[in-house]
Structures are given as structure tokens and as C-alpha cells.
Image (cartoon, rainbow, N blue to C red; front, side):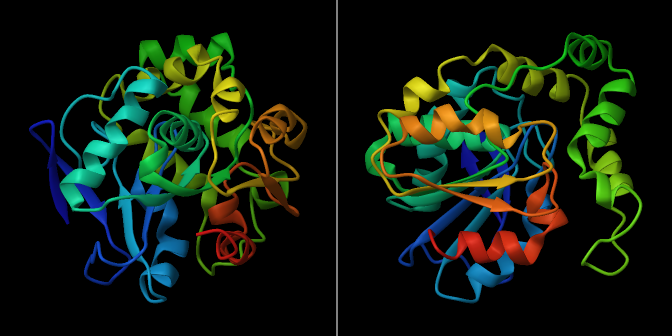
Length: 262
């Protein structure tokens, strides 16, 4: 379905059920250079079990119009506008990587609009290697290859997927390759520049779950400690034998964790 936010047509999927804002809303937010499709293996469950689901393409991503927002704070301030357009008072936010950063800031800046957080593949800071930033700015393939190589768990680089026929590395590359010029660069620059996530976490009052992959090389488990400590009452779930894309690499285990919070 589509919404109009800031005069732009924004695309979202609803998990195969009509969106009903009278139900508890769950908003899924993707990471840098990706889109709503990364949540395909979780959204359907919630849509068929009493939740109203929105898996959104952020501005300039996927099938949404506009240009990507330049900072994590700007993306977080965009979330209430989307909820307004959808007719929703508040939502539980499930965010991955950059999407998790957005979720934390949204809960800190707009606490009345966020009832719970599930933060997948998150860390207190997400610095980006200069080579990746340079490649993204130049629009070369290196950044897409590095994002895929570092993002996918080692045991799943070639095989071992629980979803038959899904080749994760090729799928990730295909999604990254279809980005419009400048989108990946924008997202990585926003992540690299954002240094206040743990500080924002101190203002988060809603129930919060961190979902972390034990083999995540992009946001290692140890790098989430400061954020987990900053968010009062938060808890962490470690997904075994998983890299950065736990919702695709280990969909059943990730779903089981999300069911406890949203």
C-alpha cells in the first residue's frame, strides 16, 4: 500500500492482510541500502496474529519516492509523520542496523509514538570503513560487495539456509545493486556520523529487546553492550550461528525473539 508523507508517495507492505490501525501496529524499518523485502519472513506472521503490519521503504529506497533523509535524527523525525499518514497513534518498531538506530532515536525523540522496540543487528556506534564510504560516494561495486561479505554469516556464505532455494549473498547484492545513485552513500554517511545513540538510549522508556547475531562482523555483540546498558530494563537475545542479517539467515529464531516484545 501507499501513503503520502511530506508530499511523497511512500511504499509499505502489510504482511498479506489489510492494514487496520485499530490493531497494535508493528513498523518494520530496514537498514542502509536495503528495503522492506528484508522482513518478508517475519511480517506475515504478525499480520496473521493480531497485529497491523507496515514494512516500509524509507524515502528514496525501494518503491518509495523522494530522496533519502540525510541523518538518523531526520529519519527518526519522519517516523511520526508516517504513523500519522497511516492513521496510527503509536507502533512497536522493529529496526535492523540503520533501522535500529532510527528506532532508538524515534523512541527517544517521540516517546508517545513508540510502545516497544526490537533492535536487530545494532551497536552503540556504527562506524563505516573509509574504503566503503569512498566506494559508495563513487558509486562503484566495491561497497556492495563489502556490505554483503561482512554482513552475511560465514556459515551461510554458500549454503545452510533454512529457507529452501534462497541464496542470501546473491539476493543481498541484487537489492543493493538496484538502489538509485547516492542512496547507499547517504545511508552509510548517516550511520558513520551518528555518535549519540547510547546517549539517546538513556531517554528510551519503552520495553526494548536487542536481537544480536553471535557471528555478526558488522555490529559485533560486544559493541551493543553500551547501548543495552543505556536503555533501562532492556534485554538481549543472541541468535546462534548468525551474521548481521539474522532475520533472513535465522528467520525462525529471529521471529521467536520478536514475538516476545511486539
